Image 1 (tube, one colour):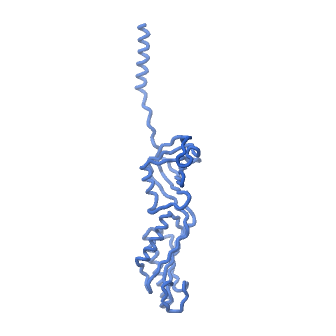
Image 2: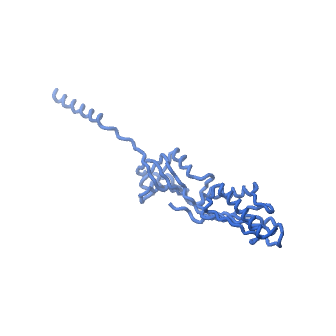
Length: 247
């Protein structure tokens, strides 16, 4: 009996020592993933580089604040979705088949990425409707006044707010018929140049802007020579963003 008791005690002791010697189960460590975040009205998904199937994802408050840095000031999505190229950190786990968060997590995806950090993110630019503005000038002047600057700033706000993928900006200066025709070409060029510079200062890529002066050759309101006509003294801005940027 004593021998059996010693054997049992030895087994229990050996088991306890083995348990103490075993390393603890490591906690899940977030991994880095690069890929495309797609966010729409009722859901969101992440397609990691090299993966064929998208994953559902959710974000920690920290990650959401970091992702917000990718959005331009005043951004408001006008399309069906927002696409972001991102480098994120998070834990990938099987999706709960009963989950119905964000539309259809349980029914649409096999994996769920719990994003804890966003290390880098870039919003893909969107297709936008053409933006057109007119900036008017005093007679024989090319300086921009407060009203003109506000018109230019409004156009830039619209570009920024829509995250527009601008492909071309046309800036064409015009004059009325007061003065010599050659001088009016120069004046219209000066007006176009002033508007171009104001657009560049506010963040529009100079390489996308084509500025020209039409002088008095394209009158909105036909007049005789040497007639001061305010509606003929303007610069027309046309901002084109016909296609969205692709990943």
